[in-house]
Image 1 (tube, rainbow, N blue to C red):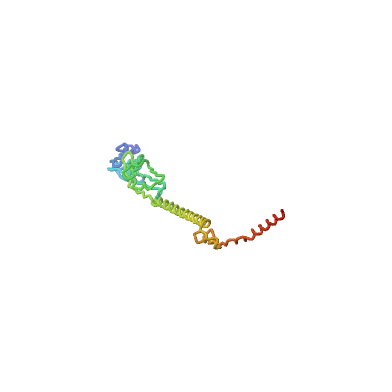
Image 2 (image 1 turned 45 degrees about the vertical axis):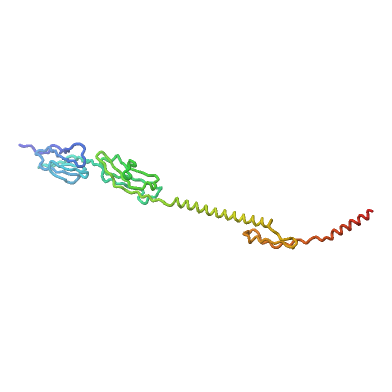
Length: 276
């Protein structure tokens, strides 16, 4: 009498190649099942989704999208049994490399600017290089300019590198806004201030000179003959000096009468007579 049918072991999955799997490789999964009677039906699952059937599951050109957990189910006429899951971790070189700029809006001369190199790769990229045009300008995921100037304007790109390859980002353009005429305006203000100060000083000096000239002319200027009885007045107001009012005609004091000398002589004679 034949013994009962049974599944002896949990199915086991073998992977070929057994080492690191890189995007583009051909990969084979083999479901090994020990059952009595032998399994007649084997199904393959990625996560909870059925993806194939048969003892062998092959992917001719694997990609990162094929990464995930796989298991097989062995079925005979009496029962079915799932294998343990295996993980396919597909390695790939950098892709979708791009540059983000902060701040993202208008950049003005003097701002602090940060460029971030974004990269999708497996394993993660450990080496980043930065270029302005074709010139190497820095390394690391982050490239910062603490006080940007118009000289920093231009096209920038980064290169992401891991052990499986490298990739450049598309170029981004930094267009730095700056005040073209700032220096010129400063000089214009300085020159205007100098001109105004010069005019003010010149005006003050001119008034002082005119004032001194008027005073000198008044003190030492020509006069008419005193016998004529009058001096000619100087109208300084008409000579650019607003510090003096018009001088009116000045009349000389009347001459002292000469009779006083006769009285003195008579008094002296009287004194002489008395003494005698």
